[in-house]
Length: 345
Ligand code: PEP
Ligand code: MN
Image (cartoon, rainbow, N blue to C red; front, side, top):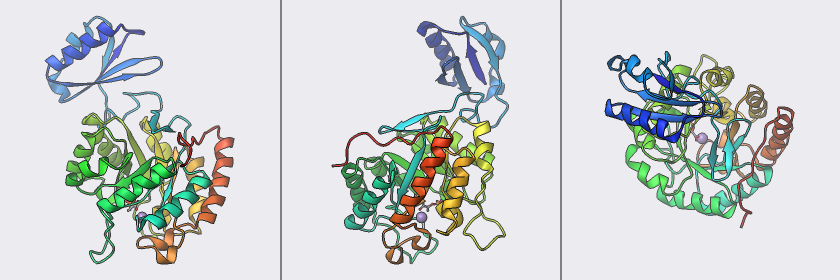
């Protein structure tokens, strides 16, 4: 349930409500919006009596959240959430443009790609060090050596970095090197992993599972939020369908669908959704037009030599062109693409 406080509550009133909730054995989650202060009470609502809470000084009303996801819901937080990842904002009109190779392959290759995507206007660098490959015989990623290269590239080109974590035991290691943790489609419902990243304070990029519903996605976000990590960015990356001419089917409607129900930012990944460079630009534009808070694209300077997902990578020149189009669209829609603080070294 949520406790809505009267306008302009004093710090003492807020503290008192928080303490009462804790005394009752529940976890309070404070949300201070522009016009409203709301305290989410997470736990078994049946065990909580609404009337005594309503009587606390400063409380306006107590209402149950009807949706199964609570902290992710718009009822808990009416305005779009805006997160700041090392100076790059996402949500509420700020677009996050993530680009980079599927996998980190070597320092020289990553630096070359990072330089090109930075120049094109990307504001977050991606690269996988632990790769979830369909075949155990495929390249599995460079592990910690790859993380070191990614961190160095982020510093060199003044970009926050994002990389995937696949196992709860890797979380401590990965957060030492990255500014945002990616949970991939295959792990969207790895609940132990979600709880583990929820215990960190590193922003999480949560990709939709390939057969997950919008509700499943929001419930997975709730797992992370319930552990106290507030910064979850959702990502539509296509779902499995009967269509076999594309890698997946990009569910464009999931963007306004999610954003209607949740305050969390949502971006699109047309690279994994289509698996086809000829379709990626159109789907990137469609994603932004549908209200996405950013676009995630795989870029490689030599796709034929890529160790993972080469066939779907855009060339740096193609990415440059696409970013030019996306900037035009962003202007038209009144959105901004922040660039990261600091000048490339
Ligand atoms: C990736 O980002 O490289 C990846 C494996 O994505 P997904 O989990 O969406 O398949
Ligand atoms: Mn990939």
